[in-house]
Image (cartoon, rainbow over all chains, first blue to last red; front, side, top):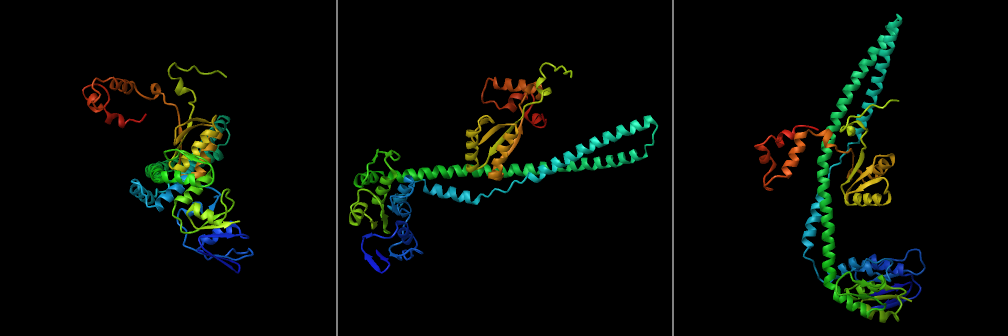
Length: 282
Length: 131
């Protein structure tokens, strides 16, 4: 690997840098190894192999966050291990990608029924009120022409409102039955989502099992105190130590950036312990 | 105000039946949110049933259900349910048929065959009758 910082060029498998940030170096490695630390003083340029999937987990040590299971799975894949659930997982993912449930928009139909119902109710009350008024006027012997006209109009409106309400209810029934069919698809999708998640877990477990012994050995070789039992998942220690062990057991072509790990005495020692090219920020 | 006497045995249908909101989820994300809601709003959640739940029918219950729908759209189904009273809603024949069938001698007998030689209603007839 070749690292250029400003006007200075460094070469080798273990390089110590002083006045650059670990973040800038990680970025430079990730972006094809030719990127510059824009805006900051020294220009960083790194020529190195492009980082693999394990690198995502251990690019910087100690890592800001660390998903041990995912990192171990990535390391196991890099080492050529596989899982019997792999093809099933691929198939389930493909099925899931194909399944796009239609939208079940029943909102508009529900709103129409609610509005039609409210209108009908209002008109029914109006008709009752006008009938009452008409009766009262007849009993009084008063002129009923105006009230009769109002009542006729209200009755016509009520009849229209009833028609609309019935149409709205029928439309809602149709929308509901389409929604039910769409939910069958959603049901199927949920089952597939669960299946994909279970298979992913299974694959991760298989892969972690495949490298677990190497992981335990690596834990003994790296700085930090951590212990791991005979089966995957029985890890007792901090994420930093686990990350160092994963970096050691995985084949890494691109350099890892070591910045502030207790127990490493310089770039060469870190590169040797991690069995990886190292840029050491000191 | 004078209250009307309620006939014995039909109380359920006379009283305003307590309804509940049934919320059903159709994706992992919606299911997770529902579980969180169930954990944090215990008094409003009558029962959590995994990917579904029964909420109290209050404005808060409706608010929680609508919040789920606002977040997860079509992956959330909201229905209104009410308690089932078989004595008010179902005729005697259906109830006794259910009990008699569960009491049958041979577990392998399908209901249609069980009902054929008796007065119990046949499945086709029951299918066509709404409650």
